[in-house]
Length: 116
Image 1 (spheres, rainbow, N blue to C red):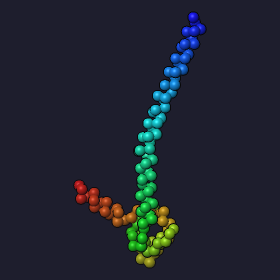
Image 2 (tube, rainbow, N blue to C red):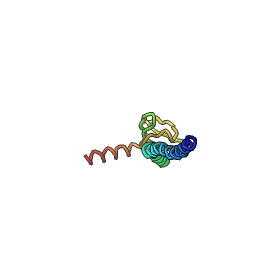
Image 3 (cartoon, rainbow, N blue to C red):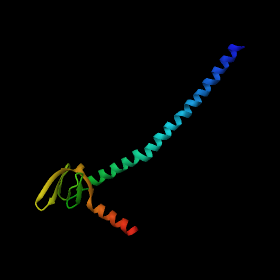
Image 4 (cartoon, rainbow, N blue to C red):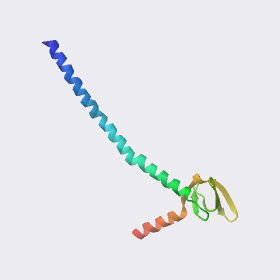
């Protein structure tokens, strides 16, 4: 009777273990979902917005470079921009080094102050 009892317990423990393994896997899945919605998805959205902004740059736009230099675009081609940062001082830079448009920042600040 002892051997049969021991064998019966092992079968029940094995089936309970499978359910316990699934239950311990659920928090891992929930953590991934939370990371996706709080970290991954917003970063992808920000990257897409930056890519769209950089591809839409044109002559006359006022920009801020990733180094913090303010300037106005004097010419643009597929890969580079020529930016005038002072009278008769022009630099060439890669399109990817543009951090933001100055007009967008002024509009956002005006919008925030009008809402307050």
